[in-house]
Length: 311
Image (cartoon, rainbow, N blue to C red):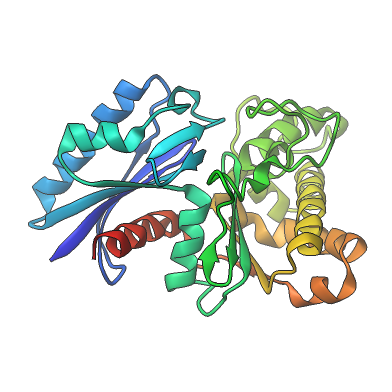
């Protein structure tokens, strides 16, 4: 059986899966993404590979990585990883190939998720669509005529770094007011902390530590603070998407990543801004779709890339 060891290198979680050519996940493991150094990351990948081999009698043909970064896929090189800066300028595929004697492929995490959703999920049959991934950061991918649009340097699709607030919050990319700082799961936590003192009745008012999931659960329970946070998130996401609709005229926008689980409390605010800011006809054409593959989109897309390259 031909299988690929696929990694989704998130800003918070590192997901490892063994995937066959039909998109079946035969084994999976989730662990915390190493924050310390490249060496720790390589050691963690080696540990996961060893554990995978202990539980599966398959011949792994390649390693394929979905990374939250601007990168050069052809060179297997990460150019800029705002949430994992120790990877900046690293030829990660060369390092992993030398370490584990397997061919290695690299793709931006949102591109990989888009490839996964087009092959197996919400974007099946779509030839011109945009993928947004909401996680620790905000990723993006652009499909044009059934292919990923990479741009001249391979860095196209960095939708999370569209400026939506010129004098806004500083971003890890070096700019300010990026969409990522207002529409990511980490942004939800930050905005809740910033706004909580205005809402003394909120269940989150006196909390020092909480997750975006807990903010969502509070919103579902009609917590006024949490609802305002997701209103703000949806507002800025709508600004970004309206601009993309005007520029690219896609047939659909697929929204995935862990943050998409809060769809029901932010999407109406996103739609409102799109209606206000985008041209009517392309806005009506661009269907907003919730991704269906969940956390598996990135690893399935990464695996598909490897199979296409190898076979």
